[in-house]
Image 1: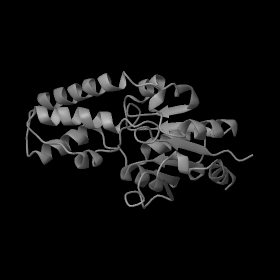
Image 2: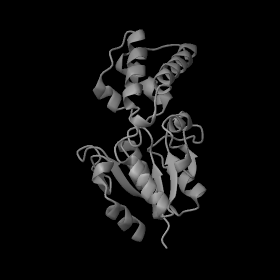
Image 3: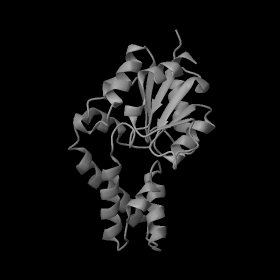
Length: 218
């Protein structure tokens, strides 16, 4: 029986925490006199907290002391945590649970590969933590996507060769990281944005069990 490694990003793939990141970043930006749009928020997908704040400051043409920078990052995360503390299983994106259950029943290896440092508490909140054999998050990596580190660590923990891994991602940086890692990349979102992925689906409702089986059988 073929055994493949399936590695899932978290934000925008399993749950839609992007909306909470937007609210927290907007609150932060507004607090220092910078406007923040949904279009700018799109550019922060898959980007580390440090890089995200650097981008916001550049957009606002602002320079701040390092101590204030650290405080703002802390405040943003505390604000974000207030939102995710209210999450429950209703926030799992459509058909994610079906896909996970199909892979588990097929004895496939499943990992999470996310830039989020809050991945574990989010998975606990939505009652999915037990579905993942391995979790690689922002606490485990030193290089942000598009560096493939997060996915390569995931493959190693699953004991699956990178070329036998399939990555589900919603960000350009994540797709690039999967491609660099020589993994099959599956974009969740718009083909216009994620055109470099091997396959692109609007969401998991478009991903059939037959398609998943074809990935396993390759």
